[in-house]
Image 1 (cartoon, rainbow, N blue to C red):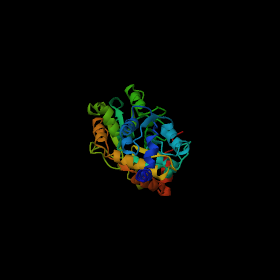
Image 2: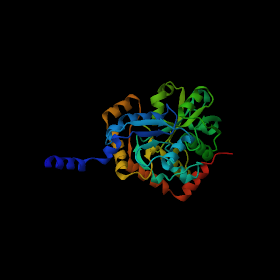
Image 3: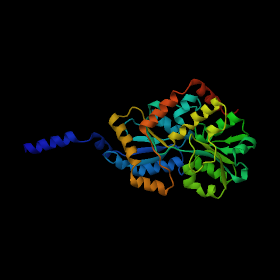
Image 4: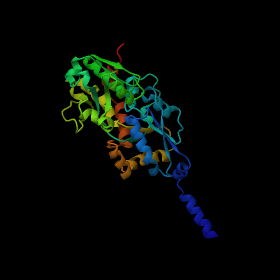
Length: 335
């Protein structure tokens, strides 16, 4: 009897409170975009595997919450979501710097205070145009008129065209307000817009590879800090100007590509649950079944961990004032 009591006490003391918590509660994963786009594909893939790497093996329930280029999700996570580890989400990679640039109306968070879980990949994005537009090179972008589609003021699909237009006086018109990247792609197919800037290369390859391989679309520039191996002869956004200040702004804007597919939880979580989510994310990035399905879906996996993502957000917050000032100016949408 006494031995049984001791055994029960030892078992109770050794119980994992994180496992006990998650064994009884599912986790909501909020996706700041409509279904079918790159963020949605990556998020749903993560949701299928991450639960088994969290103590208690909770079910992770993906939930699309589009709105304002995913600003709705960022604000919700920061201000409304329970701070107990039962909610995390993914939103536009550029939203970590939007508060620094005074660009997104309605932004209501401090990016340095999120619990950054990590990013599934370090991404390269591109500008891409259907062949009928006549835009195949950077020189074409500099000299010809064209229309691109966007989703919202804080999204890559709006940020990149606006910065490029203002920095290089392009004859570019942006039509924004599409629910997601998939909808911009459909608008290209219907010839409502000529192209899109801020199209993730991995998404293009996983969903629309034939368009590129059949030369139905052309890619004049890469929106990243490092060239993708598939695009050795396509110039980077940082190679388009000899002006050091413009180059610094382009580096600042393109640094969002390192974040690529970020996942974050609200600030103020219990430390043990925040650690469990971060470790669960890291372990999922090494899961053979996760990697096999990602390969099957043509989704690149080049993960950026929680610590590196947190450092990057802090570095962005510490950017030189003159670079932030010029970036803010170039982000102003033409009236």
